Image (tube, rainbow, N blue to C red; front, side, top):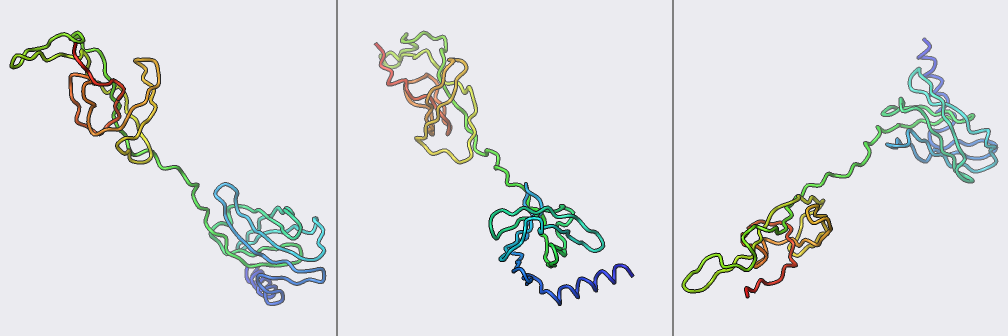
Amino acid sequence: MKKVFFTMLILLSLLATGIGNVHALDGLITLVETRNDAGGGVIFVFEYSGEFPKSYFKGSVAVGDEKYPIHCNVVEAGLVQCTSSRATAGRNVVVFLGEFVFWTFVPESAPPVQKAPSQYCYNVYDYYPSGDGEGEPEEVAEGAAVFSTGQEWVAFDVHCQDTPANFGDVENIYNPDYDGSYDYEFLPESPDFCADNIIIEDAYYYNECGEFIPS
């Protein structure tokens, strides 16, 4: 019986006052927005005209037989913002503000926006001494000496980023083996003359070795 009486009271109030705009002797109040912020809770926004003291903006929110208080703040002249319990989310509610009544729907809370994790990861190569002895002949082929640089490419790190790399992109990356940060260029394979081994891989390479010219 209590529920029926409460429902009839709401319907009579709506018929008497209207749903979104409420006229009073002192002015007009309009419910302009109902939202459910991920980080701010359930919020009702009202615009008003006329003379209303700040103490006037008090009330409650009804969901069926349950009632929840609202806490209002005059944001600026003509604009009031009220907050209420998240228990009203996803429900049709009745908002009582002073002597006025409004019918609205409270949306479900949207999940907070999260940054997508990095998806594109690439090896980072630098050259290290191989122990062959820089500039010393490694072998003789058809009467010409083939020299070893005494260095070899080694992947020392993996660099991840949010977008795909393009050839020629440069990233400044810390190399703990050389205790410093250096520019590494994204290339389809290892640069010539830097080291004896060849790496065929889309990766970041240290590309400041210059052309190797045996003496």
